[in-house]
Every structure is written in structure tokens, then in C-alpha cells.
Length: 124
Image 1 (cartoon, helix red, strand yellow):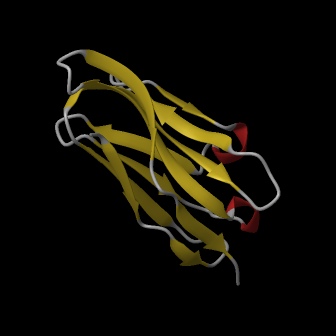
Image 2 (spheres, rainbow, N blue to C red):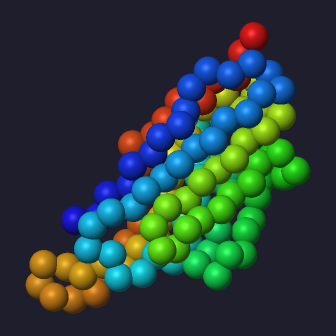
Image 3 (tube, rainbow, N blue to C red):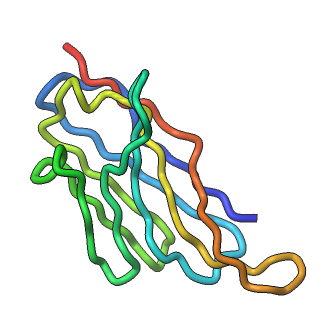
């Protein structure tokens, strides 16, 4: 069983910073991409940033230059450092990972996993 656990959300003033962390655990063989998505009230879930196992990154235009994604392959963790936060960054942030794991039947299976979500609120 693979799990993603997020931490680090909260309330911050405009212009402030927050760091989100995501830890993957379980019968993990390999983690391909890790990423962060967000969903604001009344809006669809959108990609914020993702990073490959080789370290290649991709960002939404709205966060380029303000957010930085990184990962530690040895610890199966990913971090989203958010700076210069704006009220429009307010959303529930979800960690996502594509993971190959060993199933109970002994087969390797690749699946998309999601964390439970963490609230980020940017407000004065």
C-alpha cells in the first residue's frame, strides 16, 4: 500500500512564504514524477508544478519565478517552496506522484497517487 502524506499548509499574508512537503511511503519500487496540484473553490484542479526523477521541472505560468519544486529521491519526498504568495494562490494543494510499486500478487504496478490535500490561505 502506497501513501502520500502532505504537510506545511496554513495561513499567510500576501507576499509571505510557505513550504509544503510530501512524503511517499509503502512498497515503492520507483517514483517517476512528483508534483503539486491545487484546487480553489469553484474551480477545477490545476497543475502547479511537477518534477521528474531526473530533476526536470515544469511550472504553471502563474507561479513561475515564485514557486520552486524539489525532491529527495533517497527519502521519497517532494517539497514546494512558495514565495511572494498572492491571494489568488489560496487553494487546497494536493501532492501527486506516479509510482511503481510491488503488488500483493508480486507484480510491479504503476499508478497515480494523491495526497489528502492541505489548505493554503493567503490573506491579510
